[in-house]
Amino acid sequence: MAFDVARELDISPWDALLLAVRRAAGRATWVDEQLSQAVKANDGDMNAREVGRWLSESRKERSLLARTAKAAIDAGVAERLVRQVELEGKVISEVIGRVIERLDLGADQRVEAFAIAQNELLVLDPSAFGE
Image 1 (cartoon, rainbow, N blue to C red):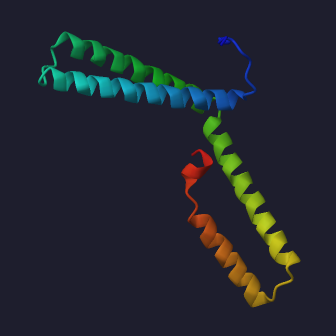
Image 2: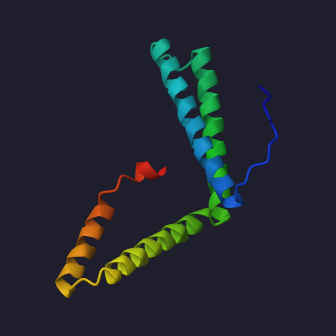
């Protein structure tokens, strides 16, 4: 099986920055786990060679994470995510409203339908959507 090291991906600059932040956070967490295991394996001796190596790696990964996060913030990734969530909420709201209108419900039934829809949206598990 061939591995394409430089394949092209269909990804926006904002999504690429967000992916870089998430991967950097994952690496920083993994390195900190290795550091914790090294400290335990060396009975808390912070001067042990292996502990020092993982401590140095931890500092590097946290520094990379901070730089990557700053680049994402400077590029407006956070604002873009907020706008995207707001747009998705507006779309959902409009669709629910249109469905309820087409059902030609009475006033009390429409209020109840909107309340049910709101409650159902509130109980959704965000992890089901990749969050």
